[in-house]
Length: 523
Image (cartoon, rainbow, N blue to C red; front, side, top):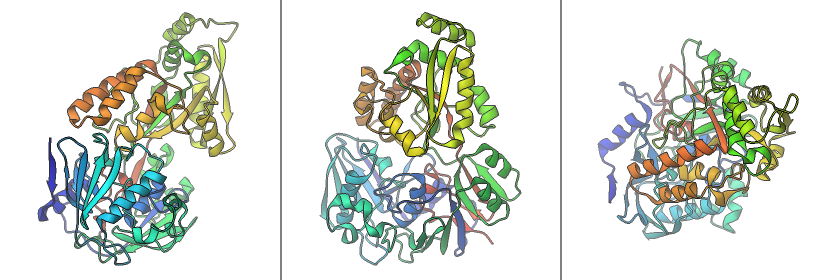
């Protein structure tokens, strides 16, 4: 099978329309977009740092080879065309010949090869480029990624914030692992994207300015983007209401989301997060005590009323989730939903050998990593009490403390939020692969092991036919939903907020972790 896409003159227009839902009007050039970051930023270099707060400025400062539309179709970006060999063992990127870094130096295939090496050495998502053995550079504008095995996830990994192309002439001195702490990550940054860094003051703002020599003619439309750092959700809400902010993303507090939906002149939508793939679930340590028995795990699922969580706690802002793959993913296959059934829960606990002893059966602990999910944890405690499971809520002093508990499997139950990051190979396999048990937070911290699940993941990881991959992942999800190493609850209620002045808001699969070169401001 051979895949080839040639970027034509009309291709850019079609890609723009598909990627952002462009309205039938002429985009206005100029103006300053005032947007927001919800937390402080550790690192602006998205080649070495993951996370949505790095991804927003990172996707503006640095370009990736590809971009994706809302239909999960790749579109040309820094690579004007590409080709995947019939055996899937090489991917050839044909770079735009006019592309320059912000200091005027040309972007070449050597920079692509260097960026891949940096990402492999520093980025936490090791599976993204693990099969890439080398990058050949036959000429300045051709980069050929050589793979040890077919790797269909590579296409998504070359988009959004996941494959930022950084300048070898800036970062190429010294050890490649030192790039993560390079002084030019946050100051005097030389990027490859549509906007260049003007100023970064952590705790205050990131200011970006239009790069006039950007490789796509006429873009970006905006002159400047000001990313204010506002960590207090209530303060952000006031700023939206007062018209101080034009655009923001990743708002996740139900009360704030529903409050902003009532504001005239604002659109609040959950569109555009399929690539991020954020999910909330109840993680279960399958290696010890009662939770080692799948009947106990199923009893917990029957005891927890997801409908209550969705309506009362999430206030209708989150979608149901029945598997570890996000419902917006093309690989999602809806599974059996454990509707509230206390009698069934009690029956399973009795069958597992945990009868009522007085007013309880056994004790468990429940951990959580951030304060916003405390209501969910408190509800789970109350729900389990109804079937005789006495749960102790353990509050960690801070996020690193919770992360250490998870990494060392020092927990029974834990409320967790995990991202898919586009392709299951990148963000899903890590949770269920037996080879990834206790390899740090957001690894297989449940200690789950199933040989068939491992085999299905391995087959899907190299299968180039999308329909065959869907079949493999359907069985994969069915087994996981039946064995319940985690109980899948809901999508995280991420929402994008934008004013009526914003044209082409970022509603593709990567939200604001995608370039805003097509966004414009109306008068």
